[in-house]
Length: 193
Image (cartoon, rainbow, N blue to C red; front, top):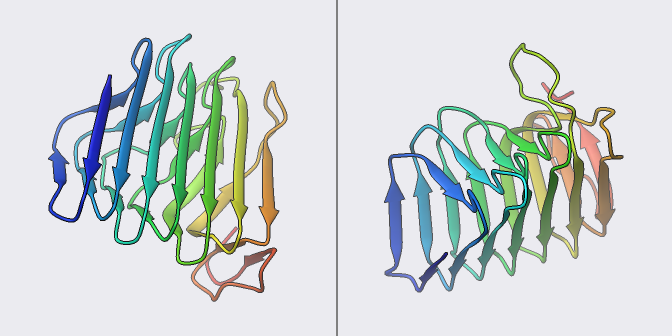
């Protein structure tokens, strides 16, 4: 299925579970000032094996706001992707998990000046709570063309069944509460790990 939120007067607030591609293909597009507020238990992209889910947030004033109870997951057991570009913004009060389970694929792409993705933390192939190992899949984070990723607490890159990767191509990643470094940098500062 597909959901399109296009234009400054177009918004959606969801207080329940948000699943993009439980089975099959699912896509959410937020553009031209549209807004999606996910305020329920979780937001998951690419849930079951064989699923293919994506969220695209594009254009000035376009916003994905995630205030779920547990971390947003991009690639649970399937294929999940989030693309943020052209001055759009994503804010998450919780962390973001990329490629959670064995066999999953998760990717996050952040590009262009004025584009910001901010979250508490970002983790590859693991949940930020105690529990049995999930295996972890193939996870990639790409920050390019002056896009910015702000993680208020931590960036966890762990060994998983496929090598996770963080690509910085003239983008900026800041971990902690300090300032961003120069283009092409990863800066860890106050309260960051």
